[in-house]
Length: 389
Image 1 (cartoon, one colour):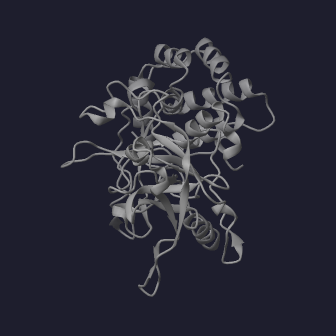
Image 2 (cartoon, helix red, strand yellow):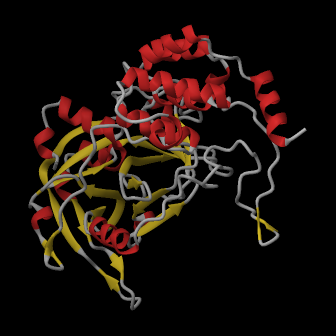
């Protein structure tokens, strides 16, 4: 019996089949929460393949596209992979989550246990970082489909731009945290970074130090300190009180507990010219950026108040919390990293870093706040003009 035959039999034993009626119900609900862009991203994130390459053709209505997709996934025994991803990334749609749980229960808790052992080798040597499961998403073409191969000069140019927009939040020369420009004169950081100073009414003592970096020669560039306005906290959202305990997810942070502060500078720092170009800002997206498990992350930060550094983790993302108000990852941070921007390998901003596992001795995660939720909150408060486009 071939490996392919054995795998098909095993999947049939484990995964309940979706009926035509089930697919009709699912397609109707999924079309109500996924647009074409979402669908393409979710399919690639969950299976490692492209919607219009492997599964369906372009030019069909959204709902029929979803029907065709589910039919193909059913034939391959991989529909739970896709439905699991939808279930995880639509925490605000209990109706859709219930439908998935009812029709495909195996998709709720975890990816189905499809475990045909795999030993991936190159020149006769086992590849230590390769999947050991022949059903790993995307294995048909790419062992690690989320590890991008960016163009070198484009990537370096974008990093250089971002470095000019990230700053150390400090008071009297002591680092409090990290922040970054999100508009001509506005900086985003964590509320917990400036909460105590704000309570003292001394925000005017806080400054944002840009371009504090170590040069290639080993010398230190002290950067430029830009003060806050005395009334420089335009908007904030507190952290969850549970995040001050050993059980930060009980209860889960609400949409009103995003741990951010939007600060206003005395000058329009984004208009300053650096190396012949304006400093600029990091635009915050309105829509969620899909972050499948093991997606790489880059965090630009001032750990321990030190010159700017970047943490790189090529298998970082662990997943969202129960209601989508936090994203967990394994990328390293230190005190002083609070308020740092988190990016994909393509330099898409996805989260505001704010917190680490309270289990100090054996930590398992760091976490951030999804950046689109912060933008939505700021705009809901009528402060969208403070953010750059």
